[in-house]
Image 1 (cartoon, helix red, strand yellow):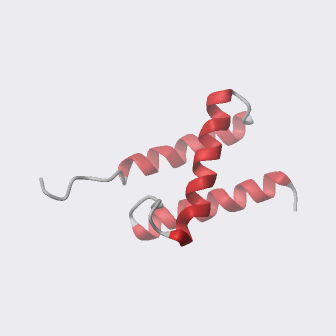
Image 2 (image 1 turned 120 degrees about the horizontal axis):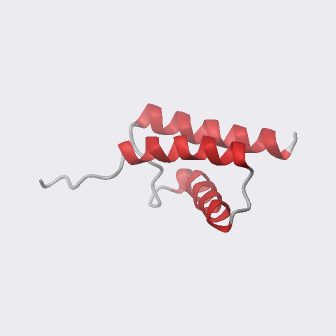
Length: 76
């Protein structure tokens, strides 16, 4: 499996998780740590300018979806 295939597989896993659960991966749930770590590492690569342009475009779509499901204060 190539690096691109692995990246796309992880991208699809996170995208499906957000669509199914209508929330972002949590740092408090151990089974979601791998997804959260992948998101953080991808953000660091983008900020450093080391991510491939086609991946940046896909990741921006993922971030837009995450922004829609951002945590909201439940006591409002």
